[in-house]
Length: 113
Image (cartoon, rainbow, N blue to C red; front, top):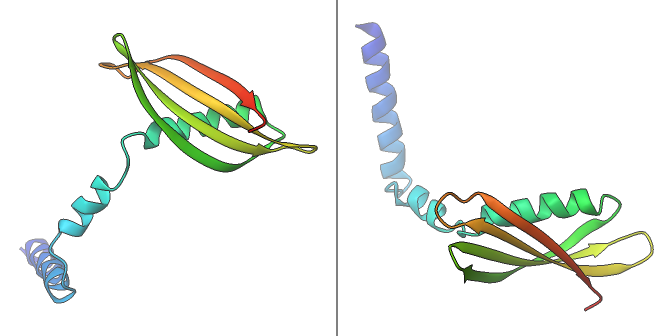
């Protein structure tokens, strides 16, 4: 009985804190909506780029868009890296199955621009 009372009191306190803080629970939902759909692919692009260029530091990141390629999708990124002797860009394309999201190919193309 005591545990039930404690749980009830905690629930009341939580709901009250939302009311008095002006929150209505929609802030959490909005934060989830603000996460772009390509975020997980961007993390993968950065991880794979760090593995391919372990001595370089990623200093900038750009999502270039998404393209449909048959039954697959391609997320396109441009990362800017700073190595020991130079700065350079790397175009990273991640091709994945549209339904399963299984990665099919990851390609890298260096650029000076």
